[in-house]
Image (cartoon, rainbow, N blue to C red):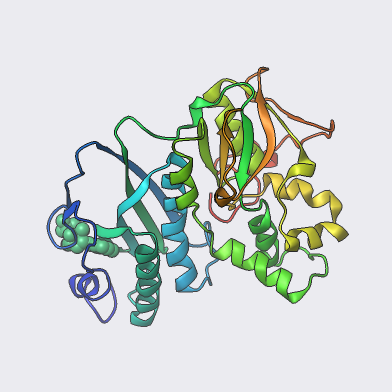
Length: 332
Ligand code: ADP
Ligand code: MG
């Protein structure tokens, strides 16, 4: 690896922090991390890899890259209802620029502290393309988890936050097509939603005992609802008018009403999609909006409540079977 600091100095300088969780017995520095989960808990493990130019623009700020690397992984833990415990960080670095690493590590540590997730190890290598792979480990009570497969007919389908902001932010970031005229604050909000996704960690934990099924929405709302339906053997009806839309996205839709399709097929939301059984009372603290319900029907079918035609292409895929399948997404 080229650069002024060697790998071991680099790790010690930027990535060796004291762990907070008592479950972490050995973290960075030995051949493997050692975790001692509390009795009565199970571990949830998930990995997401980010490649420069594919999952984030090449010129992204190191802070945005660090935030994203951890946040998209924590979103998967949230979707299982798990509590973050620790993570590993594998870096493929084109060169070791001290300033870049200092900013990257500082933001990563901010996120790690905020979400209570200890850095327990990783790997650091030279690479022609900046590549970041994070593996998160979370804990759950034994026998419990929110999976995609527990939905039942009659359950309400709900989502956290607002949907489609990041997809519109990506249009602004790519600059390949002319966006509608937006107020500066709306444009800034949409960019922020793309660059700093918010994993719904506390809502996921709270829903563990209430939702029948869940997943996180990363590759397009319709596509991700389809995954829940496939796992639950069901169809769904959704009402596009019920979709939670931010004021900034509403401003966009005023001049481009047909762009509701971008909102439901664009990626990078990192909101939760959850199924809520009929008896469950919605707590306002969850920040969810009901957008439809699960129904018996052809598995995976999504109907629109007002009879609107939903697009064939439901979201983003890395390996499309035809070029028409490939949607827009910053993260895959
Ligand atoms: P090995 O030779 O077994 O691959 P390394 O020399 O790569 O071990 O790593 C030494 C220690 O530093 C290990 O505990 C490893 O988990 C940790 N580590 C390496 N890279 C990172 C990183 N980017 N972030 C956190 N810990 C790291
Ligand atoms: Mg190594």
